[in-house]
Length: 161
Image (cartoon, rainbow, N blue to C red; front, side):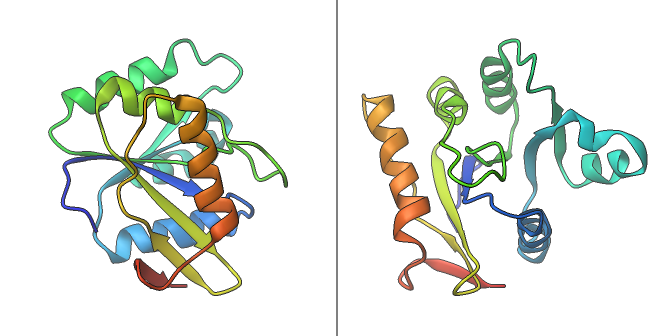
């Protein structure tokens, strides 16, 4: 695990409701303090308090109103903040990566740590810090390729699930 005070953990693929269960289990097992963005409707009712306690931040995806800039400001102002983001934003098969996490990373200066879920091999893999280039479109493609195509490789940190 990188010893960094600020990180944007980009987690993919987001293909099942079990992603949350396994991801939060890993966060708790590793004693990490991670915040994550989730659709605001998940915070309604009895689960809202528990999701906030786990680090959840509700987001109204239909009305983002400068969300990337506000999140970047929160990261810069925090002494320590790891933010988990699923760039697909949905569990729909074939969904493409949204670029908000790149805007957050560029605006906040927080490094990106790609994290992949591989249910076939039952592994959560923490890849090395991803170095941003001057080309956001190329970065989006490279991260998508890394997390969705190559899958887990044994030489990186991994957790069996």
